[in-house]
Structures are given as C-alpha cells and as structure tokens.
Image (cartoon, rainbow, N blue to C red; front, side, top):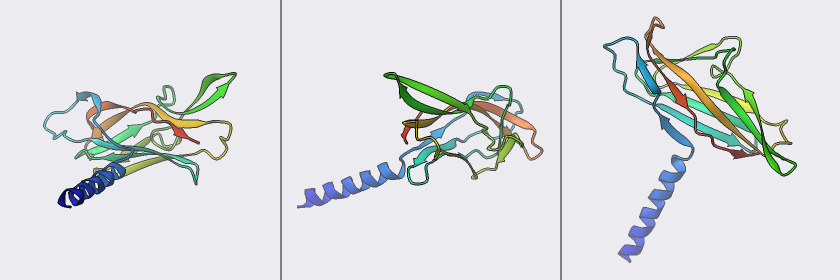
Length: 166
C-alpha cells in the first residue's frame, strides 16, 4: 500500500513538473563578447514559443533574467528572425519564410527589456488556412546595456525550431 501511494505521489509530481515546464527554454546568449569590464554578466533568457489553436496566435515570449537591461534591435537590411509556414505541394514539403522584427515594431526598431521583464511577439495566423504548420526560426542579437544604453556585452540567441500544427 505504501509503495502504491508513493508511486502515485511521484507520478503526480512528475506530471506537474512536465506540464509546468512545457515549451519554456532557458537560453544563454552565445558568441558572448564583453565590451565593458566590471559588470556582473550572469543570467539567461527565458524563451517560450507557443501556439494557441483557439485564437490562432503564434507567440514568442522573451524574459530577461540578466541583471542588466537587454536591448533588442531589428535590422531592416539583415533580418534574421522569421516565421516559417509549412505546406505540401506536389508531394513535397515546402516552406514560406516571413521576416519579422524582434523589437515587435518595425517603425521603432529597438526594444529594451528590463531585468525580470518580458517581451512578447504575437503573430496572427487566422488567414493561413493553406498552411499545415508554423514556427519561429532564426537568430537575434541581444545587447546588455547600462542605464545610459551603452553596450556592456552582446551575444546571439539561436532559436530552436518548434513546429506547431495550425
């Protein structure tokens, strides 16, 4: 009897942990380059990619867990973040890639995320009934900045491609 109760408790805890952590990934900025010495640069970015089938919204959530502001900048000349749309044509898998702004706003090309704050990019997929799946894809550079927006360090975040059924 004790073994059965213990097994049920362990199963419940493992199910809770697996559902609570689904889709969330901690990323460190790769290719990290320090521009100014003397700052505590420990931390991560909490990144969550999700798709809500009811609202048909694809969402990328970025939480800054560094101790400094994180500046995201969208380059019009060289966008590196995309929404990929997948479909089948003539028996082959095809992909359409749409460049998107990591700042969330093409007019204002930069976005500052304060420590313990979150930035959300939502993409409306309601008109995409032709496509079978969708995902975020690509990379972006994050700049750790001080209060004067002077760069302390920077690095690149590489997104894992997670496909969602539409």
